[in-house]
Image 1 (cartoon, rainbow, N blue to C red):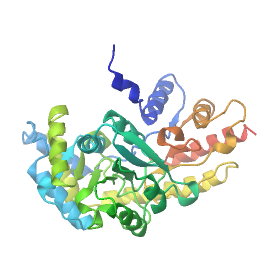
Image 2: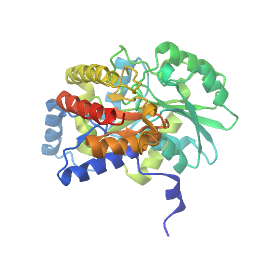
Image 3: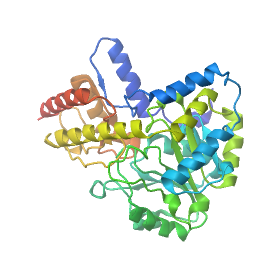
Image 4: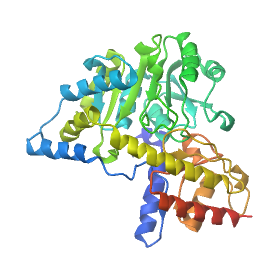
Length: 391
């Protein structure tokens, strides 16, 4: 008999839909996959060259669990240069992707029955990691009218003596919403009254931001000693397959995370680490070029979706997702919920999206525009035709 903990979690819907898309494509179906959040760009050449050089130089041995000192220093300098955040090298560590950073952090601070507040919609993995840590997920819903962001009053109302942690992303996956400095400051004012709560701030989409300068909740001095910042290279540098995330925060949390990681995976890939130093210390121009392309896609997709009767669509200022409300289609034919609608679009329009249920909002679906503008145009044409056929 398998372990009971498996009953607490599910396979991420994003991975499930991507897997289903691949299976249908292998059967000869012309599937346009808008389910995964994976940039379609090639990793910048100077980063690839650094990896090749690392292999030629024999940089292929076991790395330190928390990362090579050169990389940890590069991360320290990145936070100082780009975010005006000061960390010592022993306050940062690297992991096999930002997902492992989040798991390390949660397992380091959450005990059985501790409450973890997660604003919804949220990235699919947050809640399941909390469940694996035997914590209790407390969802606080951000409304469509407020761009899916929660208010200070909602946060205050959700906090109890059992609250141990708060997890959120900005820019947000799945909504693309971004908390402004003023909005983060208002949340920080609430947290300042509750000094025992850790804040895990997932900033992996930092560089996919169309609204201006990225703002981190770690900038507020009253919170600095309990904010755990999560970031990485997957989204901003088109390095999903390289598997490199990093975290920064209180020294004791980082040391605890290192202890946990030492038993799970040890240090991340040595060659990726060497390439990551070049990525973080090098030019951001390829990242800015990608950002411009994502904005063009966002602008087209939002306008095109707004032209489809029955969809409610906001204009996300970051990440590479649109999260339309599709509830007006529930009750038509055999569609009772967002999951049914996603399956209808997959089999009728041959376009793969992800149900909003996976992200904590049953009224919406997530559409990724991390693919070419030509594929997006064709996908929207198919979606419109399929939805109009519902009447």
